[in-house]
Image 1 (tube, helix red, strand yellow):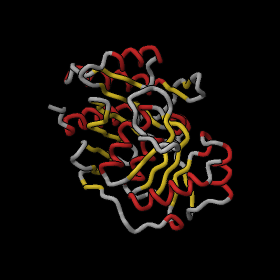
Image 2 (cartoon, helix red, strand yellow):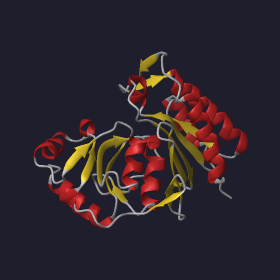
Image 3 (cartoon, one colour):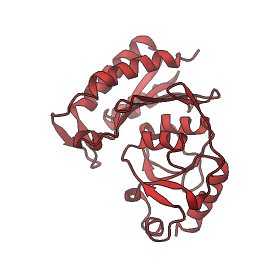
Length: 263
């Protein structure tokens, strides 16, 4: 039997409220991939790992702030499944005082996400989903709107990681109405599921960036694929590109435009 998502939610929300809403004034580091990490990332990851292990010891734990070697070892040892955690998605925002960051947690069993939760402590918004049971925001059901057209859509676009030609086309010949980027991948997925964006594109996300959010979008009625048309989620550590939309019709139009402008 899967863990009860409300019990998981209590753990994550409690830790996030205690840790991530404090005023950040500590040390920030730059990792080898150029991203930022803070003492709060490490402290939250340790607390989440300890709490989950205490309640559900059969699952291993893969966290963003582990070493690559430890992440690979945990994946290899995940016989019953594993928790995938980004303790502070949007760390650069957090460390800079920009109020867009979240905790992202997914449970992966048999190679797919079966439970996902993203908590934004600034807005006290908890997005969650269980495979086959739908998605919600603070206990209000999320469901895809059928009304949007691509030309009237707000797009969430991460230009930095996209192929240069496609990025140029998106900047100069974009098919949507307007573009945003908030710098927290887990929230990107959730805001798309909630209809705050209508389409989304990203050139390379890691497992902990997309595991929970992709399930939440899927359970809300949205669609996603890689730039090459593969399933976005794969239980591996390498980066995955994302093309997504809040409903199937919009996804078809968006993906066709992207395919026509990739090269």
